[in-house]
Image 1 (cartoon, rainbow, N blue to C red):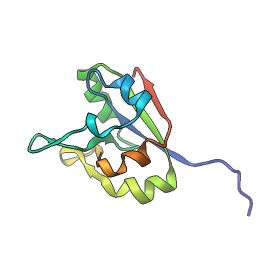
Image 2 (image 1 turned 180 degrees about the vertical axis):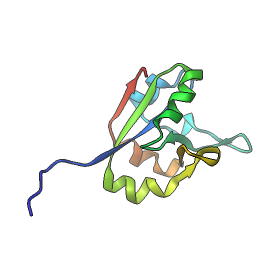
Image 3 (image 1 turned 120 degrees about the vertical axis):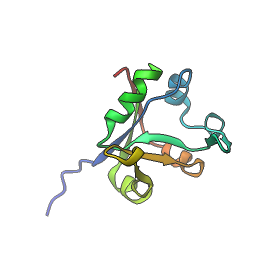
Length: 116
């Protein structure tokens, strides 16, 4: 069996809040940008799952900052991030709430900001 040497990846999507798009693109995900201040702020960074880009698009309709795409190798996604998947408000969209302790890993992957 031969390998084609192509890396399989998955993409997750975030609609950044006003003022954060360029910062997240350039500096990555930082603890200070996602405070843990219960009950309103839980310190997690929310993403739309690979097949739920439309969820990020909905938020972008309000925020108007574009959609930040993070491209993750499939193996890392399956092991580390997929277990975080949950239905958004009962489905069908799926979201991921990524906690602070995974930001350093998340920041290792390429980020692209698209206007839509």
